Each structure stands twice: as C-alpha cells, then as structure tokens.
Image (cartoon, rainbow, N blue to C red; front, side):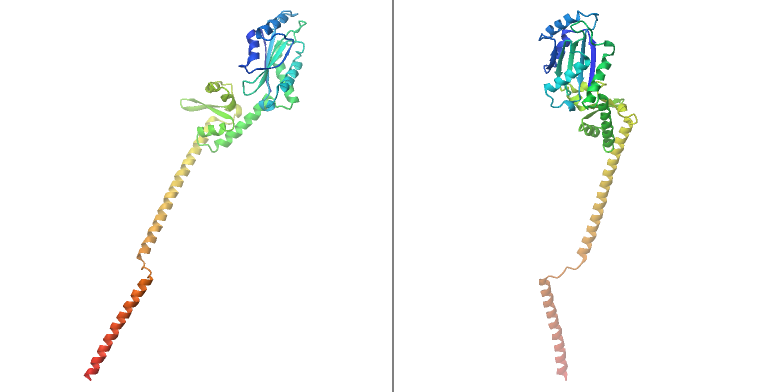
Amino acid sequence: MTSKALTIKGSIKGIAYAMNDKGLAQKVITNLILGNTPNELYAEMRQVANHSQNPIQKAFFTAFFSPHAKYTQGWNIFEWRCLAKEIIQRLDLQQNQYICYLHKSTQTPHIHIYANRIDLNGRNHIEAHNIAQQVQLIAAEISKNRQWKTAVENSLQQKEEIKALLVEYMATAKNRDVLNDMMATKGWLLQWNERDEQVIGLRIIPKALYEKNETNPSKVLKNKKLGYKLSEVDRELKVANICQQLDRNALKEQKAIESNESTNISTLSVTHMENSIEDFFTSSLPLQPTEDDDELLSKKKQKKQKKVNGVFINIKFQHNGTE
C-alpha cells in the first residue's frame, strides 16, 4: 500500500478536491463535522484550529492511502470504511475533525483524508517533522497485518517480471515494434529515448498509467517518473545490448529466408532436370502395341508367308516341267 501525507495551511479548495474527485468521490466517513459544503466544513475546522494551545501555521493535515488494486477489487463502501477507521485510529485522530472520501477516478481506488491537527481541546495530535515517515510506517503495518505486499515489494516483483519478459522476448523479436507489441500484451509499454537517431535509453511504463488519460495519453509518457528506467530494472541489462540482439534476430531471419529460397530453387531445378530426362527416354522407347496393332501385324505376317509359299511352288513346278 502506498501513502503520502502533508501538513498544510488548509483551504476551501483543498476540501473541495477531497470531496469531488471529478464528481466520482464517495464519502467513507466523517467526524465532528456538521456542514455539507466545502465552505461550511472549512469554517468549522478553522474555528477549532484557531483555539490551538500552541498556534501553528499549518493546522491541517491531508493524506492518501492506496492499496494495490488487486487487494481491493470488489470492495464495497463498508470495507473501505473499516480500512479508514483503522488508519484514523493509528493516526490518533479519533478526537479530531476529519473527512474521508474514496477516490475512484484512477485505475487504483484510494482514500483521501482531510483532517484538523488540533482537537476540540486545542491539542495538536500530529507532529509535522516526521509525518511522512509516520504515515508510511502505518501503511506498512496495515499491509503486513492484512498480508498485503508493500509498495517496495510490489516494485521488486514488477521489476523481476519486466526483466524476465525482456530477456524472453528480445531473444526472438526482430525489431523494436515487435518487442513493443510483445511487452504490451503483458501490460507494459516501452518508451525508447533517442538522440541523433541513436537509442540512448529505455523506460518501461505500466500500460494502465498510459490508458487512464484517454484525452491525451501521450502526455502521460512525458512524465519521467512513471514506470522504471531500464537501469532500475537491471543494471546489467543495457539498451544497446537489446538493440544489438534485435538486429541479430533480424539478420538471422533474413538469412533463413534466403536459404529457404535457395533451397526451393535448387529443388525445382533438380525436379525439372529429372522430368526432362524422363521425358527424353519415354519419347525414345517404342510404343507398346495395342490390340489393333497386334491384329494388323498378324495379317502382314500371313500375307508375307503366302507370298513366300507361292514362290516356292512356282519354282518347283518349273523344275518338274523341264524334266
């Protein structure tokens, strides 16, 4: 669970933001508040803050707590209220004025707390010098008790996932576009940083952060703090090495295509030669006789035989005549 907290001077605008969230905010819980509008709430809180035993410039406190979306999927308002009450108790704000609203305009729903640091007795309940550390510690303790992974643990897990995917996909992708598409199917967008047509850096950004800004998604990618730089994922994994591997894959594929074309041409040549030789010998061989051919040949033999017999008979007759 991620968290952030600040001590502030307080304003109507700040309360209005907590209560609105682009019209999607939902009230979770409030305490010691009678008004309904931001103006009314601020007036009530300011009146109490002005009675501080030790007047301070920043009498208000704001914080947000954002559990990972996979842990709060399907939650109803009652479950969010239980979480908010646990946070309020750990902050020791039970005797203070506060409002708590659920924000759902982003991919990860989270709760916003806007509170008065001064209680009804004029005592300050939140020390400003370490408020950020206090809130982070509270978030970590709640996550541990609920068996949620902390923001640091989730970050490490994401980096391991990114590294594994990059190593797997760069082994076969033949260019950056193919690698981009492969990573996008797993929810990650690649932002290649170029200078003078040379790739000098790579940032890996969660696809959800890109798609949430539907009106101008490219604006999200300009925020250098989103996602992870390649060096943050793995210092040993260099963008130059990725590009070189993609080039090797492209060259290997091209050679395979050329080799396959050459093999096909050779196969066609041999097949053509074999067919030509077969045609040559087939045309040179005598045709096999048909039934009609056999009958004609038989008649010719009979005619020839008769002629030969006739000659023999005539010769013999002349010989007898002389005698």
